[in-house]
Image (tube, rainbow, N blue to C red; front, side):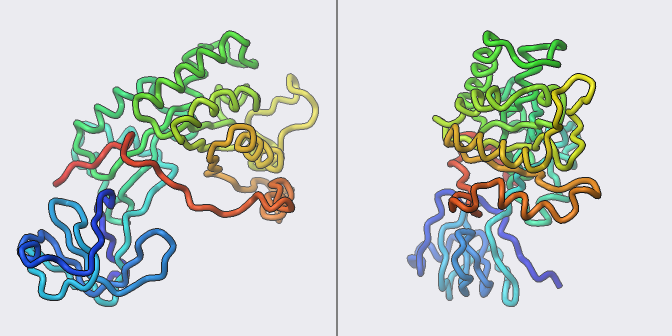
Length: 313
């Protein structure tokens, strides 16, 4: 028997109450009873029932005596908000012509109800068009879209991207990032180990991240290096001293410090035998841990200004 029961429901606008008015007790679509409830904020679990109407949570508490079209006995199970996948490559499948792929049962049956797509600096230039298309497709999970750094860089620089951006090119990239945010993106993603982002420098990335800050956007990054031999380093043309995992962590922190943006490193790992045992100590040393500035924190996803809401079945 499954030990977890996931409430795959939107939580925005939920009304928490200890009981329902008599007339409301007759109108629940779904009642989940007796579960170990985790609210997603870090609070300890509590025993509570959950009442749902019209696809939204309308009451949480002791709902004894409430009537519902469907009742789920959750005793011995855990009821949670849906999980958020911060690094999903499922955007293309969500836009598929195959309704079964768009439903993404392999995702939602594991409790993931929101996916963040366009990772690693990828994705379309037209964020508004992407959102509109996904909205019309009746997708299974909710979707958060990101502006892709590699996409923006390629759009401005074309095939001539194996170099630093020229001064006149950076404002054009900034304009594309800003337009993406205005059309509903949640932030900027980067793949600094991939083409063409590997030829960017920190100053370029900082300039683009500055555009997402007024919107409360996130910067989600695939770092430049996960070991001592990053894909983007070319001994024949680059300066001596290849970037390492430690340099990558330092760069991510610098971007956050210089812009004030929330930064997320989604693929921080070590690669290669020579980096064995370095991941945790390197992260601590490079992070300003001694200054008390490197800590685990809860990421706050903005209200559904930019999200693509899953269609009701």
